[in-house]
Length: 357
Image 1 (tube, rainbow, N blue to C red):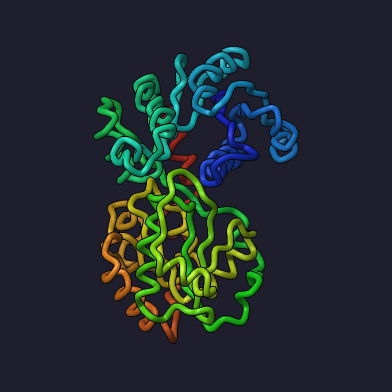
Image 2: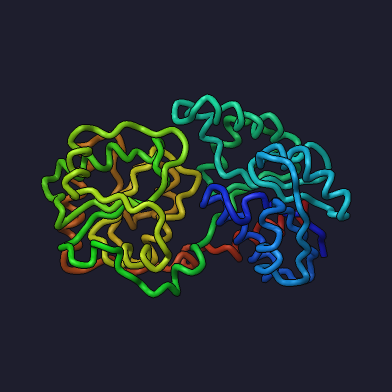
């Protein structure tokens, strides 16, 4: 048995992917190891929600400091001493004192600072500054573990533990997105709207194929986050014509419908720590065109068409060829568990390291 204090700063709000990961780690840990004593530190505004969502044996305490990095570095050690936790499980930012494990989502701000604002770079620099304080460093992929070890120059290896499939999507009843039920087909793009997601190239390539129209649009799911990029004039024109549709945030039911019906899932991120949408696309059997980067090769294997994410011509050609190849029959659906990716597996790997450390 081990008593752990979990960083729950993003429990009810904040970056969607970060919130999803921290919540699923806690749920899976409680499910897999009910003998462990779990304490979750959440902001006061989220305390009531956390207590209603978590089993009674999971203790919820309130944190006060913000932003999340300051809370993790300064506040979590004090809370851990108060509740008698043997270890703090934090996200991105390592506690200043006490035994801790930190799950680093990514250190792309170190390898590619041009993708971030000055404000983001200043704040994120606290990750690497305090990383040596962590007793254990976890991350999602081998590709990200390699980056962490290279840019952080840490003597501790980063342990890749994978991630899981978003709960709720597998059981969601697909519901058409308003205005898309009657189109002839569409290309799907999913992810936060920032410069790293390479949206300009993805949309320019789709327009260049000549196939994009109001009857066969590109559907972009996501919300602005971080440093954004200007879209070319031809893309802006396609948006005005209804050939490119921005949905903003949508429900699981709508997202399940999009994945189930898309003619192509286009994921051209310049880099990722992991990329959960890849698991979503595999689960729904969507044909995939993805950036030829290490993390996507690691997760997708031979289940995608890989392209140079900076070449509009190469991407345009891949879009047309992939749509034509799967016009009659979609790829077989692949459950992420078959590839070893699940929240339970991630937690099992992490606890083995923590208990054995």
